[in-house]
Image 1 (cartoon, rainbow, N blue to C red):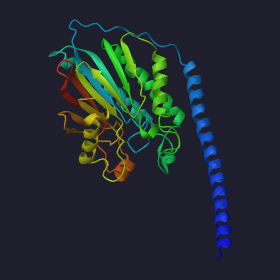
Image 2: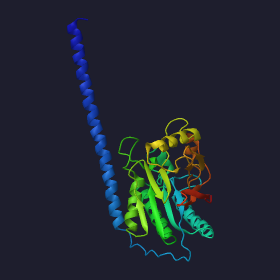
Image 3: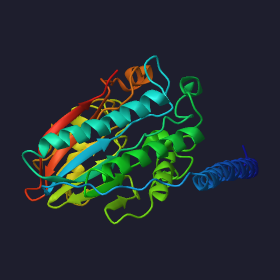
Image 4: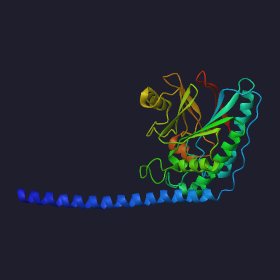
Length: 335
């Protein structure tokens, strides 16, 4: 091949690459436009539906003879509302989540015999909705649209927070979003354009401002809270990816990295995602607390993640002066 032939071939190859690049760029613009329109449509629908809510009921102030400084900490995560299995659907989800609140109140009354418990932290760990396009064939395993999932989650959250405000002098809500709430395929849209966050926002706007309620929105892949001297890290749990990502060794290695200064200092880390309840000690003397899901009968979780368990959530009681958990209670939910 002569130099002239080589130059001609190189020029032709360059032109073909430019054509391919233009096609790719057009496709990318179209994809972004579609996802942007989807996000905007969801936000508009959320706003319109929120306006149609009936007037909110009045929240009564709790009356107790013995105030206290201990905190109840309810980790509520992985509802997967909209998931349909042989033993789980949206109605079962709502019943089990509200059961976890009832159990929290009963255990709090028992704890108050030893310590005053006047405050509650509600940790919302993400994957509150099942989604519709997370894995192939998911559309055949749901009982409601993404729109309905979002508003039913927000309605349940409304009931939860109002119930807690009637039983505790102070309630703080911490949010984190999960992978099931994402819009589109992984990486197509900004991570914080998430249906979990939308449901949180609708519930927060619905409840409104209360001097005894503090809401900590999710602004990152983690949320960090402080209850006096007790500092915790809230994550969803999908930060680990790949084979073996749900093993104890892999999870504790990741959390130890975070505790080494990657994020602000914390005592314990709370995560969901793995559909099981477990705890591991980490290098700083704290723990990784993994909380299960209210759902049951998830064959995909058993097959793809290799993890499942009895329907459970998690309740802790925290001493904010000592900066530690004083008692742990897995909340077993009825099948």
